[in-house]
Length: 516
Ligand code: FAD
Ligand code: DLZ
Ligand code: SF4
Image (cartoon, rainbow, N blue to C red; front, side, top):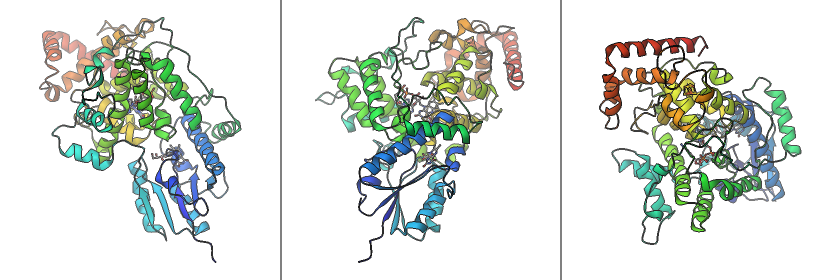
């Protein structure tokens, strides 16, 4: 009897889950799992070296676990002699070598790869099945049905529907636990500078990770960011330990200091789980259920637990829905006609603005900065300075260990830059130095003064903020949440306004000379 043809089952670097159908439906006696480290994926933006190392190590650990569970894995390492260095090339090569009856893959998380797989379909001698990514809690059809039923696509409405649909933080009568759907107003405390955040766990490097670090050091010598120290979890067991640690020691204060920024404290009370959830090492629902259980057990307060679950069940699913509903033209949106090139300090961290230097410094060191740094420091600066949305998007996509386009693009283009014209956020997240001074202790160590708008010590966020609002008055003055700021601007009078405009121009000119 001839051996039956295998099915070739492809697992991408951010699909490291054993609950996807590509794995659960595999026949261990005949099917082959294909995984490949390829330069095309490692270089389509200038990924942080820690991000590449995290993914390669996690891919290798996942392949090892599959083999131990009895699967046949064809794993192509970056340095393998015949590696074609693209996923499509590796699929074609495996089809050639193994003669499968078909190829099965879980839908990729980025539009560009989905398009490439559609082109690949035509080149393959066997069928290509693209399966839904069931790690998400809202399918494309469910999101589109929700979106079709609304005039505006506000996250808060989506989130409440998701709470009801998945029965999270609900009383038996269907009312929200704690009596409110949203406790955001309790989650804006500035953190005291002497805050003692519990230490984070880190994971020892095993032989696989050490090999990967050597590979990345050799193959990406000029890559962005610091490769070591490297403490990431690289398999599910370790990621679950990180989740445990977070739930017990960190979550209780997640809400209180969610928006705070403290010099020298990159993590505060954030979970650090995004890279693991996005790569498939953790499941969003198990993370939400753990947080809910902490509230029901009385070990974490409702403002922390609701705020945390909202990020995952709400924002994370919502931005994915927006991405797939509006791509590919979403990427082209530039509602505010911004076009200045990205200043060099986004890569070097060398700027006299202490807040930006701190956020970029964390990014360089850890391939991480927390949400408020991303939104209200680097994002806010890019918004106020009118930086080119595509350049800013490519930066965010490159520099964070958790970055894939489905989640990064709506956050950058929509939330931070308002480039989608308000589809995602009704009001731009624009703020002056006053906000950063209130929410952080950065300003006390800064060359600039957050209370000064013009002159030598003027905080660049101040004049740029007013100049931004002035430039876009036609668009924003009608917004119900903006009249107060425009009346403040009007009360300044023409002379002061002219001085602020001149100061903003001077900041932009200094930015272009990399002297800000
Ligand atoms: P926590 O603060 O502990 O939040 C808990 C979890 O909620 C996160 O792990 C994440 O899974 C989810 N979450 C929180 N906020 C968001 C959000 N706005 N959108 C989607 N999920 C969210 N997140 C990414 O996962 N990848 C990205 O590439 C990414 N790019 C961003 C770019 C910009 C400009 C901004 C403003 C935000 C971006 N975010 C991105 C969202 C958010 O900043 C990160 O998810 C968060 O900082 C990750 O750190 P954490 O795990 O400690 O999160
Ligand atoms: C991000 C990334 C990197 C750096 N390298 C690989 C790789 O070598 N092989 C692979 O299968 N996936 C990699 N990835 C993740 C993919 O880019 C990811 O699957 C797509 O961006 C879709 O989300
Ligand atoms: Fe940032 Fe301005 Fe504060 Fe300096 S003074 S840290 S530039 S907000």
